[in-house]
Image (cartoon, rainbow, N blue to C red; front, side):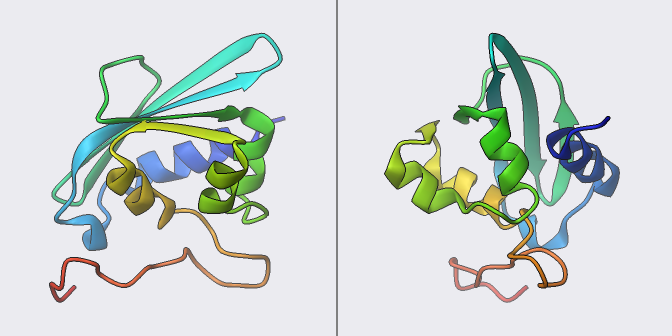
Length: 125
């Protein structure tokens, strides 16, 4: 059975371009642990183009969490910031880029589409 995490990253890779991320540049690495096994995904943003790899390349930001937590996050059951404040998720590096990434996560059950935060740079989208 395919995990929600894998389905999320597969879906993100198939999008290839996310227009509202057109001003973002950088690479995020997600290090997810499932018992003793680490799973790594790297997501790169460049002018709205998004690529997803399963490598361990250098990144501008790194998120470390239990895979079970990430499964819940990509299904809208968990929120990023409260998990960081509770210490369930560790973030190193570009916190701003990580926050932009969270805009790709689904909202609570019953909400259609992804959450889309207001543009924080004052540019029209």
